[in-house]
Image (cartoon, rainbow, N blue to C red):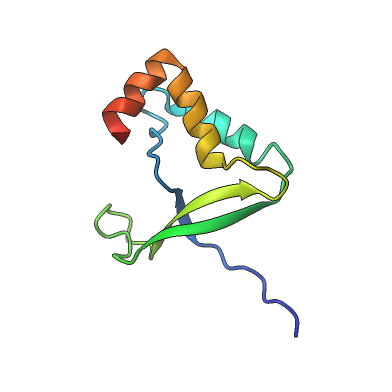
Length: 103
């Protein structure tokens, strides 16, 4: 039996809230996330941490379930989630954002 191809799902990174592009540090966060994922050429595995079954209606999206994942490159010991946190908490101004929005 052959494996069925994966189906796209709306996901967010678990345990962290990244700023929108219009918010402070949003562009930097998007660029760094792109470097870690799209530009890396690596294969990733998503570990499901939580599933929001409200269908995105609470957040105004209405797109179906949102899955909170920890994203790990197959050949890496650190998750994308952890790498994003490391950068944000080691940058002084980003630390203020992190403390305000994530704690």
